[in-house]
Image (cartoon, rainbow, N blue to C red; front, side, top):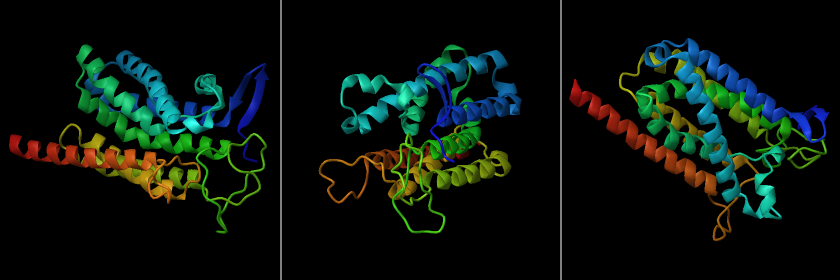
Length: 261
């Protein structure tokens, strides 16, 4: 059974499916990154753990902020915006916050930013894939109603998805897509990248494509007031901007690398 709350501990404290999946994803991300030759060449284990820890805090803040901005209609009062235990994070908000925070921090500790961001981009899709299993269990990021044979139906009264209605399993679509991206990056692309930043740009392009496409099948999107036909959501606009910016960045990095040879 798909359950949002896996285990009640005490008082307001519980183990939630999304939080557990996120923790497992982060652990796998850290373990794989620590063992990778790129990390060994760039910085010590201690500095890497410090960078990851600070990035998690910044990413959490950025993810929550963008979720609030995209979901103002869901809050009855301003206090609910700080109720993190009720869930609600934007992955793209977290990514943007980390991209703003990490370069100056890495410069401060004398670590080149683009190579380390490449390392993070290599393993980030696997983190996303694992975390989306938590979304699936909790019922967040749910899909549109469908009659397809692989539709899923939520019955947990605490689920964030509508109950007793067959829905597109958009979370599982993202699990599969992110896993495919990770395998492609890990088995093929990391052997072919030549310039710092190329892996990062590839990851951001993949993120933009996946989010833009999958969001057409989601039923929890926020649209602009003037978009009465629901043509494109706010998150899709951001995903499109992320794709175009990373495409331009990838092109710039490629041509600069060719000129320097």
